[in-house]
Image 1 (cartoon, rainbow, N blue to C red):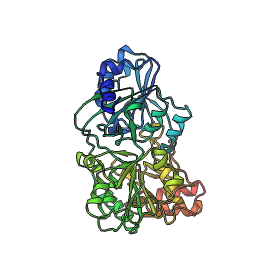
Image 2 (spheres, one colour):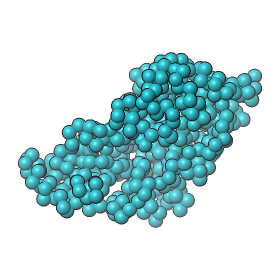
Image 3 (cartoon, one colour):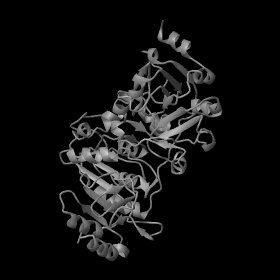
Image 4 (cartoon, one colour):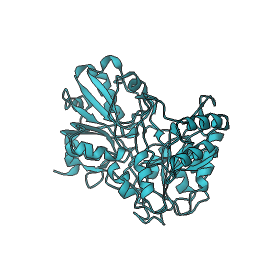
Length: 431
């Protein structure tokens, strides 16, 4: 049977696809815009037909109908990282949560510690050899394909066909549906003067020829905006977005000086504009890979001069980062922050930056604190932290004593809180 014959045989309606689901199934959904909107809308509409279906995803972009506290006994979202769509449910307790390093999620699926009964994913059109590309979210989804009883693709001509270990053959697919709506766009965060000041400190410390991992957020994007004059930068990251695309377009990113996968940008998921998605299509300079490849600290750390830039919500005077909760109240998740901090620490000439504004709530509270708020979910440990950057400067903590760390961090705190922090540090014998 030809590839096209197989395609026609497996082409289905949403109703056919939902018929493959069984009560109790754990369904794996790719990161972000890799989620299949037509299938998830159909499942939302039919959710009361099912019992104890769980949908696991690291970052939901759209708030589908199944995000409903009244129907969680039918279909429940299980988050690996809270975003705008899932955060309120997580804080209220009707969205469940599985903590994990992003890099370890494929391994958890392979060991069946996270189930993967069914995979629902967006996909590019099939090529002449019978392959689809799961370019928007290779992440943990590629591992789930090997475990799943049923694989259902939403084939969309607006999904790019990317190179790398992100492809699946028609013979592996259980069913597919077709859609043609534009892939969801996610705009760049707003950048203000605080973010610009932090971005300048970081950008000034990035050398030509460095390889970048850039997280999502206003401060990482503020760094990107100030890198256009750099030369021969490389990219080895978890997320490719419009900020990185802008560096390619201005010539700052060439990947020529990368010693690990030279000439190639590497990422595991995409989040951005239609322009970004078009850029990804059959681009020989870009490869999308599973997250246990992109985020593995040992593999990523083989890039010399790896620069990791990630944000935190709060940091204590020892350097412990609370990046995913406000006290005990969940806000996001671990994601790849710890993965890339460790990778940059392993890298020859690498630099790991944790960035944060010095204050929150209109300058009424300090984000640099004597100890993390009770119940805070700690993301990056005191043993991994290196550079901490606020709008008031750079603190270098790696190799420093507890007292030296407290001094460094107080120096980059907001001036209004420095005396208070010194007093608190003395009370806990850090000064």
